[in-house]
Amino acid sequence: MAEMNTRRTGKSAKAVVAADRTAGADKTRAAAGQTAGTEKSDAAPTLEVKNLSISFGGLKAVDGFNVVVEKGQLYGLIGPNGAGKTTVFNLLTGVYKPDTGVILLDGKNITGRKTIEINQEGIARTFQNIRLFKELSVLDNVKVGLHNHHRYSTLEGILRLPSFYRVEKEMNERAMELLSVFDLDKECDYKASNLPYGKQRKLEIARALATDPKLLLLDEPAAGMNPNETAELMETIRFVREKFNMTILLIEHDMKLVAGICERLTVLNFGQVLAQGETSKVLNDRRVITAYLGE
Ligand SMILES: Nc1ncnc2c1ncn2[C@@H]1O[C@H](COP(=O)(O)OP(=O)(O)OP(=O)(O)O)[C@@H](O)[C@H]1O
Ligand SMILES: [Mg+2]
Image 1 (cartoon, rainbow, N blue to C red):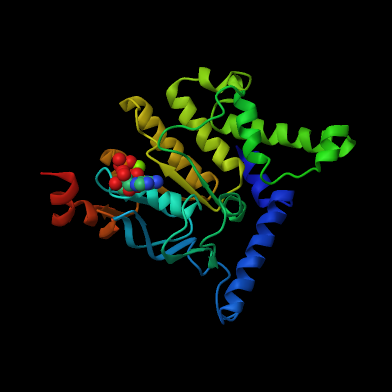
Image 2 (cartoon, rainbow, N blue to C red):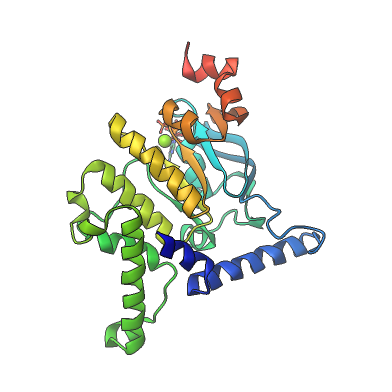
């Protein structure tokens, strides 16, 4: 665990990638007329979304959605079934292109970019229905995530040149570190589909983190979990935020989990923002109780 943190703050290749990103964000801000020096380098929120909309046929699934998620925040997106929450994630990750709106990641406009590019810019996600490579090992599932950042040419891979082995070794080590953080290292050779459900959810989070994101999107991570698994998941999410200094946007129907870990909430209803703000205030908002929570 300690090693993971050291790696993130040390002079690893990943740290260099992170430094490049910061430099990129600085350039973007400079281009937007914001002077370096008068502004802190981390002044832009991790995520800022303005007026995001998409229609499917006649249905406005997301309609004028706005949100600001500050760095390090644990932010919840809640609302009734069909409100548009997963569609927001699909828009943020480039699965759908928005009809209107802007998505800024660390101040950089990523609207309309491809899914793989957005992941490389720093957004990773998990899915409402777990999506793992079921036939692959636990270790290989995490290595798939790492592949987004580690590069060797196809030729090096085919010819098994020395750089291939070096990168492979590095990836194995890094994947094992991540698995041990999630207490999955002992199951590294298991087929992913043979893990119990709660551990599959954890593995999905580990794989998302392997892409070294700035923002982690979790779509109903507690879905299908029993109360013990949910309590453990809460700890895992807290842990990820604290130890990886991660910014997390979370969709969830389990209000105990939401109230327990989210600092701020946005409530979606029929594609529109119904309420937004501090968790306790939003959960006590009469409109939210009427539309979603019930008495
Ligand atoms: N690709 C699509 N084509 C047509 N309609 C879609 C598509 N994706 C989503 N929708 C519709 O958009 C609306 C919002 O769906 P979405 O999955 O975002 O809801 P949700 O808030 O995530 O709900 P849940 O809590 O049940 O997961 C729904 O009416 C859904 O049927
Ligand atoms: Mg959904």
